[in-house]
Image (cartoon, rainbow, N blue to C red):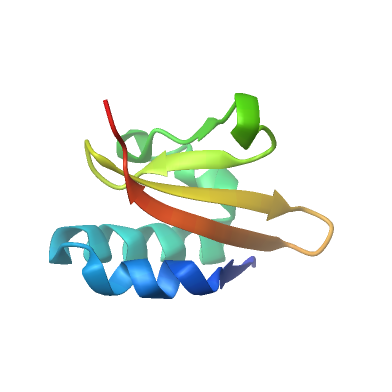
Length: 90
């Protein structure tokens, strides 16, 4: 089982996100806690991927078409650090 830790800014942002995104994030979080990040790959809707550039080393999952959760994995301690929930700009 993984532990999901959230940056303090995630808690602030969570208050401002739409209810649909809150439900998606809570489902995302539960999947990660139970099955780890590999469990996200089984659900195509999350479209989990590795990030490049300045976000190198982080991963991103879709919460819907616009919103993303950005996180980093510490496999040694089975911890997932959520650093941001944001609307993706196109």
